[in-house]
Amino acid sequence: MTITQRFIQFYILLTVLIAPMFLKWDNAPAPFTGWYVLGYVIVTPMIISIVLWAISGFKGWHRLIRTGWHQLWLVCLIALNIWAFISQFWAFGLNDYAGMAQTSSLQLLIVSVFSLVVMTMPNARHWIIGTLIFSMLVHGTIGQLQVFFQSDIGLSWLGEFSLDPQESGKSVLVANGVRWLRPYGLLPHPNNLGGVITLGLFASASWILADGQKRLIGTVAFIIGFWFLLLTFSRGAWLGFTCGMLFVLPLVIRREKFFQKIMPTVIGVIIVGSLFVAFYQPFLLARAGIGQENTEVRSIADRVIYNRIAWEAIREHPFQGIGMGNYPWYAANYLFYNTDYDLTGADVHHIYLGVWADLGTVGIVFFIGMLLGGIFADFRTRSLEAIALIGGFIAWAVIGFLDHYMWTLVITQTLWMTILASSMSGDSDNTISDET
Image 1 (spheres, rainbow, N blue to C red):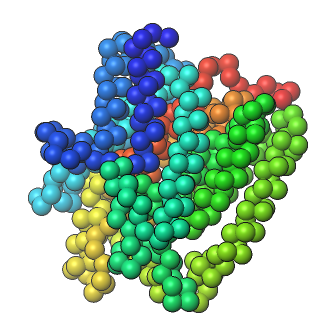
Image 2 (tube, rainbow, N blue to C red):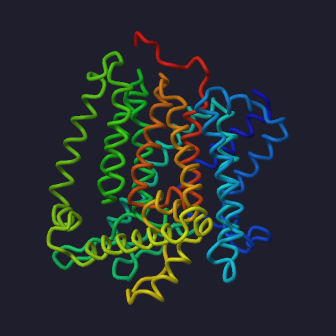
């Protein structure tokens, strides 16, 4: 590995490390303040790695096209970026706020090119797995402390939000008259934290099936991380984690001593789950909608309304869409002129409806093609780390039916597309043999 590649690998890992932090530059010079996406700290190491890749002569570019599925992913990714860029010329908010489509398409471009860089660096996969486990434990612990103190813990310099369960707009659960603050970590919402912890669980699962000290560390990390996942009360993360595990199970169940290796983890998960139900039963019932607490009813109702508005945008602009990143502006106008709901414009909690509304039928076809190409690119891989990463990607793809952060927020969009790119970056002979 050349010196340039080592630097690229460093900046890739730095990007993954700071992805779960809502860090933005303060008083930064242009263009970091001129474009919203460039205001995030995470963009800097991404751009540096891209520049270094170009300096290296785009070393490893052949990995981008080594199978038909890789080629499908690459073609759809390029087409999606082109379509997103030109959508700014017919964007719904073009006259009032042209920057919405510009910054959203720029964000997609930076994340996409960074994904190409990740795919050319197969050795980064091992360190990405370790970083995901580290992030799960660190940010889960921060969330646990926030729950314990029912407030933020003074980490605003790392991106922590001010958290007071009595303030309007904070994500809380209400049971028996008590407003209970959900854990945020260093992210904008507990659901985001649930997603990060989900990735860490899949990463630690790959260590559970390994041998030696890794197996012990993976087992302990998984059990602790499972508690953190439950603590987020993120229904989307719970569902995504379950679906992701069901997806990867057939890929690993035939491995030697599979049940023997996972049994301590299974026992630990059962104990942790039982303790969680015992400690948080009132809030668990509230989250399930039993008792019809106003916060839960409102959460579900708001999602339904935004979904309906997305369908209306698709009906009005079926082919080209309303422009990349323009759904919140469209929703704000629709709510103001067509309803009396006490809501503001916000992203639809459904990435597939969001992409379809923004980019029309053309865009959603490219988007789905990119997802399928990436998922099947290394479907026959025997690497535990690659399987773990694709499992995490699937989990977030499922969460995407209930949330939007893996597509709209640059820090989480980067994380989502990075783990997919890393799972696709293995050697061409890294496949499951027929007799395995």
